[in-house]
Length: 132
Image (cartoon, rainbow, N blue to C red):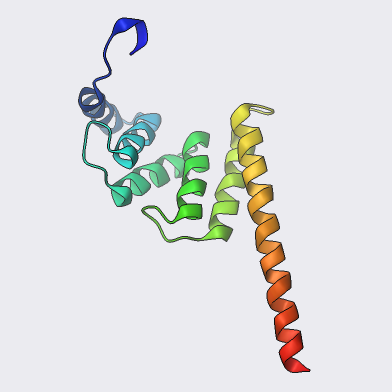
C-alpha cells in the first residue's frame, strides 16, 4: 500500500459506506468499484452497477466513464452500446478538458459509435438486398 501501509479493502468499504450515507457523492462510486472487483467484499455486479450509476447521475465523471464500460460489457446492466456511447460522451464533457479521463472517454465514445454506424450501415444494406 501507500507509505508501507497495507491495503484494507474491507475497512475502505466500511468508510465509503459511512461517507456515502453522509452524502459524499464519490464514496458511492468507490464503493461500487469495490463491489465490481470483489475487493474487501463479495463481487456483486448488479450492486456495483447501481452504485456507479447513482454516482454517474450525481455528476461524477469517473462513474460516467465506468458506467459506459459496464454497458459495453453487460456487467451488472444490460449490454447496450448506444447507452454506453451516451455515458462515454457525458464523461468526456464532465471531465476536465484534455484530461486523461476526458481523452479516454472521447476515444471510447468515438470508437464504439463507429462500430455502431458500421453495423447500422451493414444492416441497411442487407435490408435493401432483401427488398430487391
